[in-house]
Length: 166
Image (cartoon, rainbow, N blue to C red; front, side, top):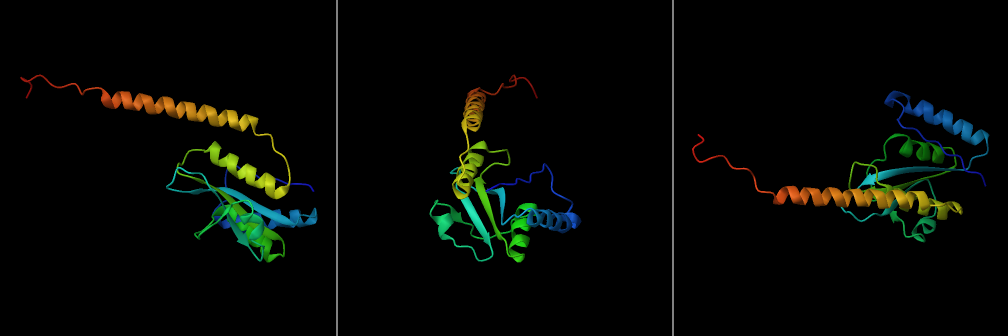
């Protein structure tokens, strides 16, 4: 089947989110859409990356558990990512959210990779991850360099003032 992606750099203003979501779903239903998947990140204190799911409506959890995805323990999924699947379920469509955990506010390509792998399995499609894998290596290399520079700076003795300075 076909897959339609909706992406944006920004969320609609809060007072317009429902209107935008309803219009998106109207279009989606008109073209024969049946399953709405929200994709986002979720904060975690752990450095370990995990992929979580949250279901809107009466979907079978076995499909997600078979892929070792973890059920979200609660909280609020904000913006279009949470709103679209919830409104879709109210219209009788399948709706769910897939979330990659991250412990940083920075973009996390390693978490994105895990989400893409989960989505590719859920949708039965193959995705070439070579470019993303290169990006992950580059980010890790830069993080390692930054960590070493920070350690060097911390080991450097602080300049002291002369004993005669008051």
